[in-house]
Length: 224
Image 1 (tube, rainbow, N blue to C red):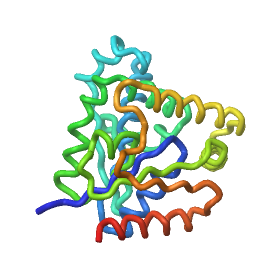
Image 2 (image 1 turned 45 degrees about the vertical axis):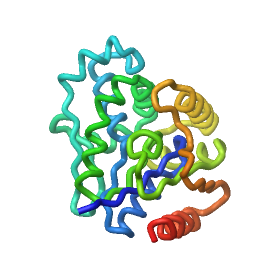
Image 3 (image 1 turned 90 degrees about the horizontal axis):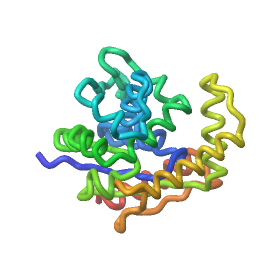
């Protein structure tokens, strides 16, 4: 059986996870949040007192780490570090920062590549991340580059963090977004960039429902 794959890339806070989950549900595909994998590894590094941006400190940890994805009855992806469900904790700002740093290490990306590609070999998937269309699934059936202005993304992330009970001011969130954009786009290993054959969707000033309808229409047109 030939499985279909949809790659959704874009910068931090662009709404990739929310949109990809909704799209996967609508299409009956499996949703794979690759960023959550890097977040989980970043958490493991911090838990072990390692600098997530230092390969010399991260390398000895890789043989010890046990990362697993599982899916609840509602189809939502859960991340496990060993037997610990870390789905919620990896959304904290400090873990986002650790994920950005650890994902810039080429050896780490190679270490996790197989896990990501195996999902697309055995399921119809909607996969989101930073380099899905360019590196992980370069032959994806549909490629989307989802983005929005830094200010718009910071506003969304600020609201999200407040809803989770994580108090942080908007200016700090905006500064973090801008810093992460620079780090993700400037890294040597699989930098964040739009694939040549990806469709650009900019959701600045657009509601969530309008954004999703645009995404769904784009995907349906290309899958047809």
